[in-house]
Length: 362
Image (cartoon, rainbow, N blue to C red; front, top):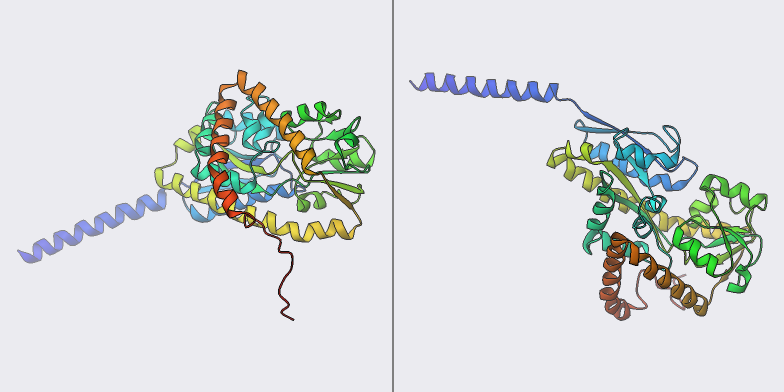
């Protein structure tokens, strides 16, 4: 009797192993296509590289993303609709590019005098920000995850010195963002809308008097040190820039909960990798601009106070007609007010502290 029970049990175990083994062998790997708004020549694409690498490592044998750099599948401005309608499953982006579809996107990628890189990460992960992103992109049939944040944008680079707001009057400036353009108009400057790929040539030929794009590392790699003499800081127009991945909702829903969890962790891993590298690269590439002889100037506090008032004015006017924009800004303001007490206590040991002197260890 015992022998029969043993033989029967063994047969059941073998049958189970055979079924499981066959299922694993025949299970199809889910394959996604992903592209980006960024071509390889713009270092912001590194956030997309980091995300794809993390997904393919964590989800090996279950989900595989084939990545196509910006412009190879479609023009950059078409990627939003391509993900929304399911032509492709995913794309990297900068949310502000889609402000024409809904003003809320102007708050999710960067905002003048707004959130810093650490602020965006804390607000997104802990302060209710993720719900805002999901609501904004969800209106268009997409999920969204942050894959990294840049440091503050460098500021304006050009061939005319900018040391005061008076210097801006009459200037033609390449600066992205609807809010930024409204502020420039108030300051007497003209916003010129050109893509990142056109910035170098526009500066070289004098189409614009000055331009902003991103951090020192990104700007240097675009060759902006070759065609400019002056650097006006800080980058009030974009204290940070969020990189993220749009995922078609149906494609997302088709993943099991385990795969979804792995993709979420992949985005977090990419955020850490990209954000840290962007900050560390500032060391090398700031020095490259200095060694090139670029003259750096800095706005005083009175200038920044004036810009803050203009930014607040734009925020109040826009919020009147756009409920989701208002909801996003209310959430960010709530976070900033609640964080302000700790910021005051923590100062001057916030993200960065420059000692007035260092110990001599030589």
